[in-house]
Length: 445
Image 1 (spheres, rainbow, N blue to C red):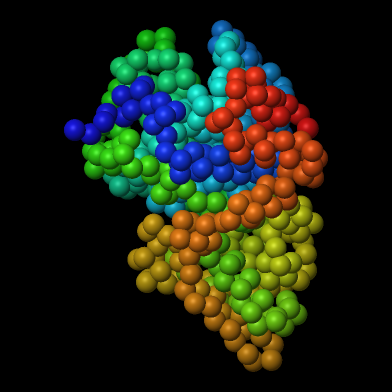
Image 2: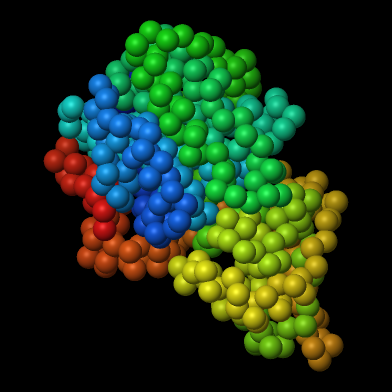
């Protein structure tokens, strides 16, 4: 008989976590903190922090530090500010089957609770919370996408996973975990993802409200607030039959080499390979055709004016790769948006809505690219999906390079090295060692 999700959340132990799951959680910890480091310097993160400090004073649940800032607020305030911070740069881990992201909500919320609790937390305990949060989030997300006609943001389903995990962290019963998940699901932000793609703003992927919604749900359940059932957990059984035996977190988590929407990545990779394999420079390029699935064509973004528009564009990041050869921390600076050579090529990119790619872009995202040169030559890539999925995983070295590219300029090499080391083995840390990791992740640079 399938394991009920509330029993899974209440009884999961560290010994139940397979090594490939722990490897994934360690990698996500490091990758999320690298993204958080560069994202903490953005205007969006600053606005979120000021909002949390203004509205979320510490109360009976204790105080928690804002991610990479150190300001003291309530756990809900820290979860909100932290999730908006991570989401400010679209480079965090992702799940293609759910068309979204879990780590950007899960880590800020769970770090906030670990900081606020009046007892020490070990790395092994934190690993169990992460496993519950990711696994419930992914399965709730799959159930929601299968049963709802609109495409909702990640905040709408991560609120359920965060609620279940924090209910576990608070030591709640199975019945209370059910209520927490139901509250988190019901009050989670059912925000429309395509709205932010068509009109990019700081709303982003909804996790800035999904994380505190889930956290608040768990604390409400502790006080006796009711909300069960969570429909995505209890009325979509096909997504839960192998819970505890198979791990969607392992199968579905992927990592992003570039700080922009995953839907743009196959085109970026294809353009990069065409440039390198054919010895091209940007001055050779007259125009570019990108053939891809329908929703990716709505990214557009030929002339983004803000980092939000850059994150939800496809033409400009592809042009950026053609001109600069990479999309790193430097390319997130405002002056990149006015680079004349990038703009020239971006405005010469044609997006082609392809029915076949739309049909097959379910678990993966597909595209091909043709580069047209001034001298009449044309080079076309093979159809491809993005690097970072399980069939083309980023290596440990690539994850490390990305982490340092984003974190070193903000944190300094020494602190970045320590975060990389400790997050890469966080589940083995004692309570004192994990407290030190919290300090590294939460205090201001």
